[in-house]
Length: 182
Image (cartoon, rainbow, N blue to C red; front, side, top):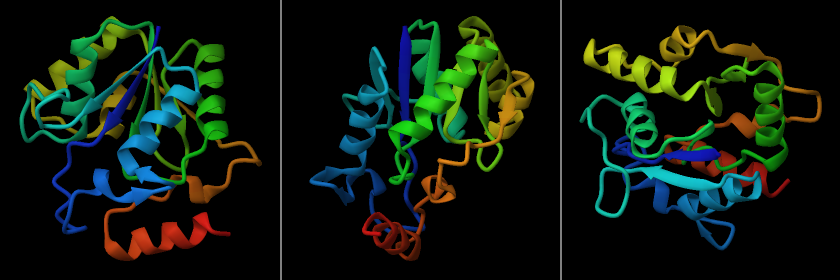
């Protein structure tokens, strides 16, 4: 089973309001991310968001790794694809390539330009290593991926570097909207 995980638990301090609820392509960033994961073939999609009706962190205040751990602890899977809610330009092609490479390598992987999105393999290792790192306040996603011996892959030529733009501020959000319209 391919599990889709959306990281939407941040406090959006730099943006000033909840990024997950920003309007995007007739919905919100959250509904866009959910549909993107469905479109790439996820059998189940979980949203890490510290609110009722979503997956809440077991390790509160520990950042995105705590969200990944909470979702992995909630549902057993064969593999997972993790995306942040605030990367609106991610494409289906970008995720399909990442999933294909992870399956081919039989290993967790991410692109060289960004640790997100991430493809995660070896479920039991993922849960154990994420828990261990969080118990020792090692919250870095990059460190987690290194601990998983994740493969770093170069994005193919057809994948635009703009797909990896993160929107943490109003300026970055405006830039993403401009790029969407190109």
